[in-house]
Length: 89
Image (cartoon, rainbow, N blue to C red):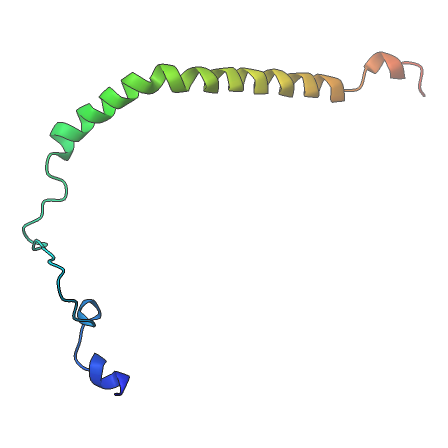
């Protein structure tokens, strides 16, 4: 059997006939993708952030302080001391 006879006039989702599996679909015109996004979604975001801020923020703050301290010390160690070059001509 040639493959073109099987695929002739079929859409990609209907290439095979599967028996014994029931699928349910809703029309894209009946779906409401952003239903309740503002009334339920935004308060949920604020609730989640408020509940996790004390577990996530302290490691980031400590990490930033360590990074800032190490960068300042590195900058200090890479500078030349002007007193060492006072007698150069």
